[in-house]
Image 1 (cartoon, rainbow, N blue to C red):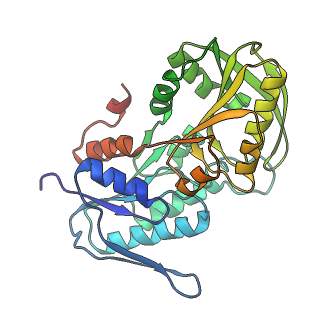
Image 2: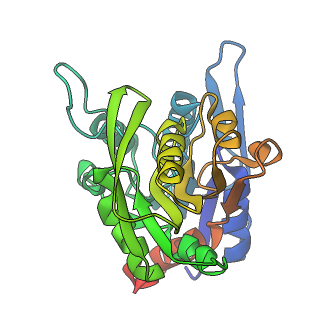
Length: 314
């Protein structure tokens, strides 16, 4: 059959999908995706994909439920069009934070979403920086997991710091991620002891590690309301840090997150385009968005050609 991957773009991140297709030297498959007047989603694949190796690129970002349903309908349409293999490419996976029961009588939403996506008819899934690694086990199909860290580390290495750098984890749960960043940047590690007072409300308590007179880099997998991030930045500056920057793969930036960041001590928020935040670039000059299309293009090509995906990070 030769080299002929079929790239389908949902509406959540068309620029990323176009970038992936361009780097792979192919065109995205023509699709008609629209809404009926009552909000129901209609989609139609407008090319022959029978027997094709299809990759559907769709982040389940805001509006989360609409983008999730759109992904499911695209999967079903592709399956009914007799594709040979269907890979759901989900750069940002919504509901990933609800990966376990932390209170009584609550759902494990990440597992439910995984079941629904698998039931729709995928053959495999491709993600970047899942909130928790065990989510890969929620899928009963093969899962490939990509990392945005190498791209962000390369960017940070180009910044000229006039002093030492400390990589900071905003909470205990992110220590492993921050330690990996610190190792690659040859810097020391700090941790912020954080207490969460309510959903999307966090209070930074105290700093573990020495940040006095040093530049700091807060590392997390996502920034949502930016409450944790801005509290962490304030705590670092109060403890004598020279500057605060932040790295995250997924810039969710819901509610008044942009206003919080603009009014904070953060010099720069480095993120990827796993979520399409193009419109926010004009509202927040602290936002630096890195393009992950090359990483996904390489991973999709390796999957299509039956090569190792883990070789990307060796």
